[in-house]
Amino acid sequence: MEISVIVPIIKEKYINELIKRIHKTLNGIKHEIIVVELVPEGEEPTKIKDAIYVRQKSRGLGRAVLEGLEYANGKYVVVMDGDGSHRPEDIPKMLKAMRKYDIVIGSRFVEGGVTNDYTHRKFISFLYRNFANIVLGLGIKDSMSGFSCTKKEIYEKIKLDPIGFKINMELVYKAKKMGYKIGEVPIIFEKRKCGVTTTRTFNRGEIFKIIRFIFELKLGIR
Image (tube, rainbow, N blue to C red; front, side, top):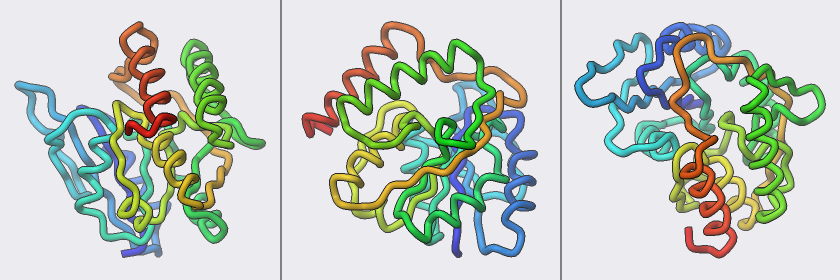
C-alpha cells in the first residue's frame, strides 16, 4: 500500500461523495481510505462505502488521526477534511513534492494558493497563523492547515499529543526540531459542501486553549 488517506468526520453528509473523488483521483496508485468518525451520543454511525471505517473512541480531530494511523498501511499518510473543503485533486501535487520533503502541507497562502472560506474564518486563521509562527518559528505560511502528506515513519518516531484540530501544527514543529524537511504546495480551499461545521474557533475557551497549546509546545510540555 503506497498511500493511506485519513479523513476524520462527525456525521459528515458529503463523505461518500468525497470517497468517490479520492478513488478517482488516485486511480492507478495503490491507496486506501480510512474514515474515522466520532459518532454523537444517541446517533447512528454513517454508512460508509469503499473505505475502511473506524468509530472514534477518543475526542478531537487530532486524536481521530492518531486512531486512523493504527489502520494505515501506506508509506505516505494524507490527512484531509471530510466536508469537501480540501480537494482530492490537490493530492497528486502533494505526492510529487514528497520527492523533496518529509512533510508537505497543503497551503492556502503560498503563491498559487486560494481560500474561498468565510471572511471571519480567514481573519481567525490569520491571527493564529502569525502568532504560531512568531512563537514557534515554524517557517511555513499555513500552520493552521488540516491538509497534509507525511511519511508514515515520522508519525512512528514523533510523540504527538494534539488538542482539537491542531495536529499538523504540532507535527511540523516537532518534525522540524528533529531535522525533517517541511514543504508547502498551493491548494484551493473550498467552502464546505453541505452541513454545518463543528469546529469552534472564535470563543474565549477555544482561543485560550489554542494559545496555551502553542506555548506548551514551545516549552516542551507537550
